[in-house]
Amino acid sequence: MDGPLGLAVSADGFGLEGPRGWAFRGVSVDAGPGSLIAVEGPSGSGRTCLLLALTGRMRPTEGLAAVGGLELPRRMAAVRRRSALAHVTGVTELDPAFTVGEHLREQALLRRRFGGPLPRPRLRLRPRGERRLEERLHIDAVLTTAGLDLAALPKGPRTAVRDLERMEALRLSLALALLGRPRLLGVDDTDLKLSPAERDEIWTLLRSLTDTGTTVLAVCSEAPRDAVTVRTGAGRTDEAKEAAADALAETGRS
Image 1 (cartoon, rainbow, N blue to C red):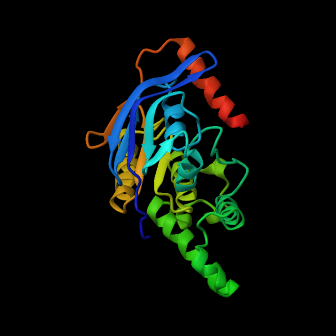
Image 2 (cartoon, rainbow, N blue to C red; image 1 turned 90 degrees about the vertical axis):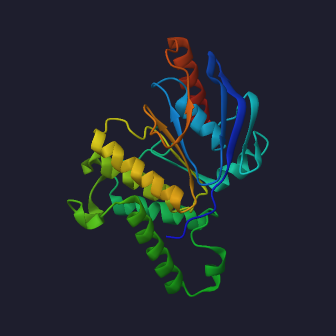
């Protein structure tokens, strides 16, 4: 799968205040296109809010930030169009009753209907059969990139999400995000409940995405040494955790 041109990510004194306090504050980062950026911190430290803010889905309240030269929050919509999210609870959650094939078909349909880059504009003049073939090839390519082998699943593409192992579900979420050919990919809870070997597998996969040009922004509890690391506050109070939860809930309602 040909990789897109990744987006540079920069921030200085970046912060977001929720109804009950700061979800995160004082964040700085400077990462070039195609970087692996790890947002490291304990659960409840505002990691997901920072992920959503840097992908144009949550409005910051202080500081400066730009993604691909697009200033936040003024160009949030443009950043959203160039980015995609995977594995974000309450935002991109997989439906446990859906099969893997149903998730893939639904995402492809949404891309066609609502202006995403699948299929690409030049394909619209082609016969329907050719467009469907191109779409099928693209789906196969992102599955390969995400390391999800449908033939190895218990019931192939008819396997329900509830029957997937945790790594398989994470790979499916990544594949669904990659269908849109994002220039910035945000992944939440990258290493949650994974064994050391599984964590190594996922970081290897994310590095392979950056090798194709995509910028990857990944939330984790422990960042790999080769990543551009952004740390959110350790030892935050319960009030700060609630502020992050409030801000995330507000985004879900918007």
